[in-house]
Image 1 (cartoon, rainbow, N blue to C red):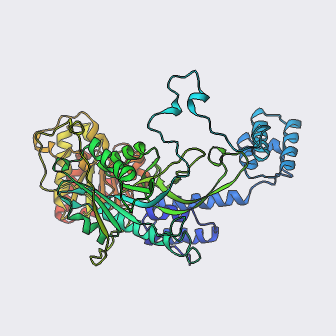
Image 2 (tube, one colour):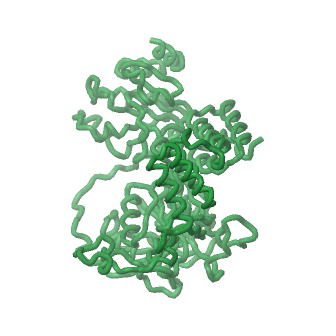
Length: 554
């Protein structure tokens, strides 16, 4: 029995775990469990890809005996990447010259030799040259941007969590991030000999903290709630002009907290880590803050962990051929557009240049919502700086507000409409989708991005449903209902990642080769204007499953 039963996990949890398993037999057992259980195509593809990668590694060629004429230039590049023996590389170079003598292959081998031995003048550490001296003919060298700090060796501490609020309350993803930050920093501060990823605190052995950041109007009372969810310290800024998110003041306030806020406890240059929610406002703020703080950002992450990283890139190590182990690195896995492949982003310093805070934005729902502990104690700090009037050049004079936001994540059923609604009348297409959703006891109504961005003209009675809040996909909501009905949706990967964890997916499309067919449980080849009314009628008469089978056969 493998350590991980894939049927007990969502794909967002499995990606980082599967990619760390090196036992092919264990992976095959996981694949059997998935096939006998949930049988989700993305999960099986994820496991199969990992098996294929490991088997390819096992079949690696022997560089001492391989016939280079059988290898492509790419094969040669991959092979020499892991060779540290210069004599062997010289032998490969001679064999390539005696064989096909491909410039690309020769270049790859020579570059590897140079990276190990170093070039004639790279035996010493890099020397810092100011941009104005390095580029004397340039009036404004790219590297000489006034907002880029060239600091090195500064002091960094703590994990800062930007806690977004709505209607005077912490939103769930803020609580989720606080819980994860608490978990990470508890492990980080523990005895290095007792747990992987433990550092025993900062470089001097002092425990590092979780610092919650809250900005808004009348939000002071939320500070204690942030402590209950895991913060050691809460820094908040209240102002009646900050009731709505505004780019300029929010960015300036958070950056001032991170870098210029003079407090006895904040005896460091900047936070070590910054995390934000990957909401509409959180995505904006995270990019602005991290850019202003001269660092990078991994957006829409699906996991976080802290551990060392071995780096050989001379741009980071300062010297070709050197391998340097960087500690305390925040690893930030994020899904690609396919939804089941993952990249892990690192934010590593380089000589004469620091990249802190290491920053990430987190997809809502990625982490479990923790139980609050209202007996926890923490320090609450009010942040107070003058906010110039020119930070508020745009004034909201009037707006409409829904009584409730559109949250599609809690429904048993989702009916989603795509651009297939333009086959006849877009307004009628939306009406048919709404009628089907109303026929269920608990159904939400969603849209693909194509509907929202198209220039359709809708009748006023359905126009209220055509909002970005109802968008499902990479830049919208992520849903996992028991039943997902996709009508007129082609199945682009951006939409797929927002719904492919649904228990049962029913797709309706006139195109038999639509991408959505590949990850649907039922595919109905037909016009939504004909199929949806039949499904609605069948649902009302209690014969939905039979109707799905019938229209699928038609």
